[in-house]
Image (cartoon, rainbow over all chains, first blue to last red; front, side, top):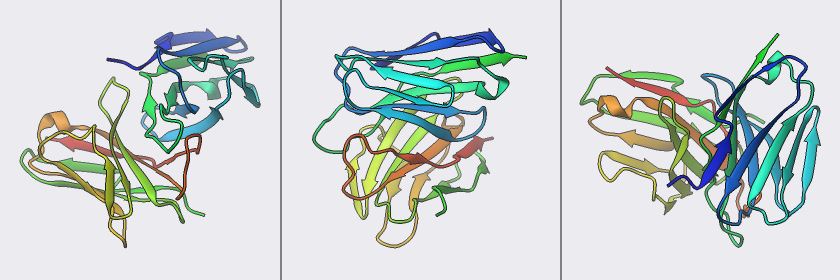
Length: 113
Length: 116
């Protein structure tokens, strides 16, 4: 069963538009990661959230983790073609020791100039 | 400080041959994770290793697949008698010793295996 769900599965937006990608789990998460993958390439780390209610921003990308630590959103403001790619959320499920990161299925983003 | 290095970047094997994928973690990192990304699918965890130890292999197929991370040298993911269904991108990630939940794992560029 898929432990992490992402929505939408794919997204096509006009350049300059804002967009949001969601990541949800039925279980509490310890360490929520957002990565970006360019087609045919490796993963680029974007942000990591740990605390309930935490929010981080980097350039035009903002990620939030809800208070229950079961849902995260990634928001891109004024999208650009360089934002295109696959966005993956990942999470660890153990608090006390390093656990493997489990990934969601990904959200494919296309930005039309 | 070089990142996680994987080689080869592309590997073509005929059915029945062996595939050896190498991963050199970042300097000072002693935790290595292998993931597989099948076409049109997400990243699936395969195995987690620390130096000379397999910590979690719950995602490894029961047959033909093995992984090691020796005291010296890179981590190796070995696939014996490859079949077409093994064609995928294999990614390696590493993190430092004493890592706790919340530590970023750095990913390599992946090895794309094609079985013909």
